[in-house]
Length: 578
Ligand code: DGT
Ligand code: CA
Ligand code: ZN
Image 1 (cartoon, rainbow, N blue to C red):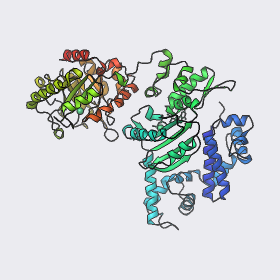
Image 2 (image 1 turned 90 degrees about the vertical axis):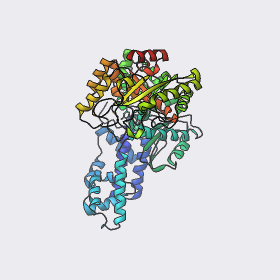
Image 3 (image 1 turned 30 degrees about the vertical axis):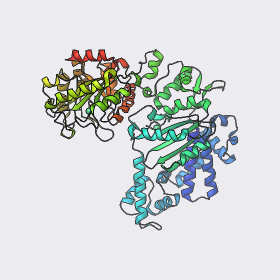
Image 4 (image 1 turned 120 degrees about the horizontal axis):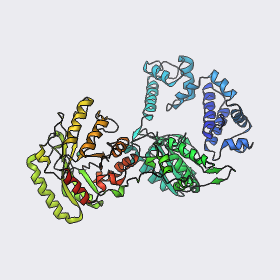
């Protein structure tokens, strides 16, 4: 590949910058608009501008006249553009950063630069904080405050959004987009489809022959704060809550390559393109292209992998962590699926901080097709949860028996416990009490900030107790705000391998704990896993898929997860643990 092979996006960016700089300079408006129009049209252009250049047909591209064509030609030939180089000496390109601030236009930017010598966003923020902007002509205390608020909204924008927050937003958006006439498919790509625990932005993919109605609907949704781009093939918006989304429309017969591309990750895509090249093909979001220039279109994503000669890789595993090589070697795992889950083993009832009775939880679990539910109420030391007192354990057992009677053999209800690993490392029930429960989870909720050695030792004590069957949400983290305990995971996993205890992947999307990386390490060491929602109400049972996705990100197979085992196998495993 030559060094000067600017992509359509690169070219669009260059002309966009020129337009912005000219605007700050105060150039006449029609010139500015010509560059903007060219930028938009290049960004949206379906084919490769580079190819069109090689064929000598640049002016066939809409919005590209003779002057723009000459600049593209210079860029491809020399790798740079004299016009832009000169303009940049006159007007610092970093000024364009400030145009990102909502409601800040080129006139104001020019003013800040000329009067106060501010050349970038950091400088602008500093000046605003010192109150230097308000004395400028046409400014005041109010408009200065607005500038600051705008800068702050920009920095919020760069923060990642937890999956659990982004997920319902995406579901809602896709629901609305699917209603638009002519839309054949609408799905989320990007990190959301890969089920990363946080997402930078949403990438929505639509299959439709005609895009204008989709784009209009998308950009005029009530929750949209600003439209940051609108074109034929791609539009992008920022929502009131700070989340950003981009939406691509592709023709249905090219949807497979488009979805594959936009699902990423970037690293995974690079591997696939390398693989394609080895097969004499180039792979883009639009198609495979043979060396003679002819295209192979993929309507479905499966075809992309098929053409590359490897099995389809689930999005959760596309993080460039060896999956493409494993696919080539035929050693991809058989990724666990939601339908493999037969039991929910970590739930709460009104005996501690759950919202509903054991019968209601069990019925809800049965309605979701589970064969087993364990009710694992908290132990007493975790004050706020009104844990189950030792004297009440027998009464709870009786209530479970009654619920079991009511539901017949449609689901098996186990009496479990989520026993607290106390700050001193002891468990919150004595051993002979723990031995009475059908299944015991031990969890950390308090004193998470203890030094590494101390908190690790606490965890190891719990792991070594033969009455403990599963370590619940091991690190205790909450996404995004609470970091987990500073556990020495190597030591923890080594102890777990010795004791045979299972480790939980909490499916609760604020937890996802173990995370994907730790889950993979655990199974590599032969540690069984358990995926549960920690439901405190029936509706939360539906969070299971987040846990399964985290397991898939960790290359986990069904057989490695105790919730997938038939009840007999599960019960005999529990019995053998004591
Ligand atoms: P995020 O939004 O930071 O959580 O992460 P992603 O993975 O959603 O990445 P994003 O939104 O920047 O881009 C969406 C997808 O588009 C990405 O997963 C793969 C594809 N993509 C973006 N930029 C590139 C690129 O430079 N090369 C390739 N091959 N693919 C890219
Ligand atoms: Ca994204
Ligand atoms: Zn719990």
